[in-house]
Length: 259
Length: 259
Image 1 (cartoon, rainbow over the protein chains, first blue to last red):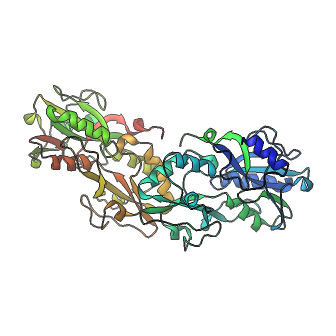
Image 2 (image 1 turned 45 degrees about the vertical axis):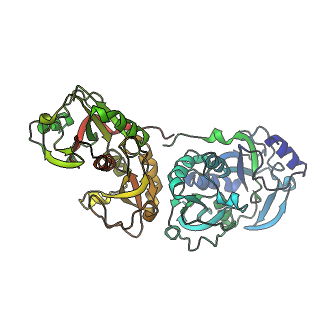
Image 3 (image 1 turned 135 degrees about the vertical axis):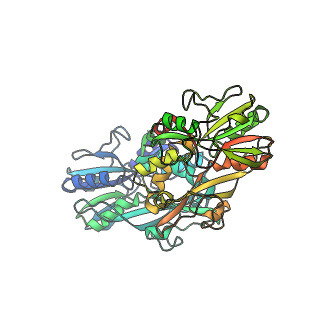
């Protein structure tokens, strides 16, 4: 299935599942849509916190059609599942947000770690959550974000156990993809970033960690949704977790030289 | 003092100290000199183990004059102090090895971590052994080297305690300098690479490690000397630890893109 085909199926309500494992090699993105009055601050917030909130494309106001990640994809119905937020709470989940569209909405597409995960697997670094068919483990941390307006909070991280002799490789490989979270933010000592128990993640599932593995922590795309809850905006739309926007750009297009 | 001036003083026997802290910004190198019959295997060994044994220049047989790291420096007297080895043991230390020169000697200059240390300091990452005016802590490990002929053994690593929120930076900064050992070989868990007690280094001095710091381990230039001891060659010359060859190339000349 091509990304275009997946988006067309989603638009017709015929694709409603999580997107992980579909359209291998193509970029997937987190969605946050806000009324224009909050958009400038949210964009500034993303630019000040590029590791957890890497901005791939901004769409609108006045349009819901992408141009960078895909040509002319309608962000109101080409994702398989959305969340509609009121006053910082999830009001409903739905497959189409066309009925909620307002001319003043600005859509933010943020990078997702699926892109660097395929680079890790290609380098022979296995991913425990994939092996165990679970969601990746995610945790709240004490790593403060740079606040802009109502947008503030601390970073959410995803954790992957990596065999001790591949940790440096995992760090360097992912550092080549800063637009999809990039290098780890921490290696090895969860208590130093405010995580008490690796077996009790705040989001996602717990996974096994072997004796020869080290927990490696990456900035996580759940961060912006977590910030959104705290900001208690009257209205917002996001993707439902795991139900990402699938674009026409390849993950490899995001490969960059490491500064 | 320029590198040329330091080398001239050393050649006249007027500079005999360790070279750390001299000629800031210029490359320093480890020296190993062997009879030609062992040179091919040793060069192959270095090329198979480039992290601990990064080959910067090979000089001879038939000459002792450098061309890459400096133009025409005589490796028989421009280092401040040498070790002369017989049957894998140190026979003597001396300031000039001209009397021991044989036409069949091949001189190997190997990268030294001084080069990436200045890059770390420039990024605001402090070095405990410098702060405490001690030698860096070095350890034998269980990381096996690729053997070639008589040259075999395990990697020696140097350890620097890095504050937990700069570990990734330290990894990425040093990865830009593969010819001077490059990225760390391990982060965080000494027992996984066969180190029982960080406070009992096998070479150099112990340093303080603070509660918010993580021990980071880099491949170390002591590795080739350690291998040389085990190879028990009838004759060899090396620099005395800390008394390096100082070249005319800048550390910055060794900056590379990370693959």
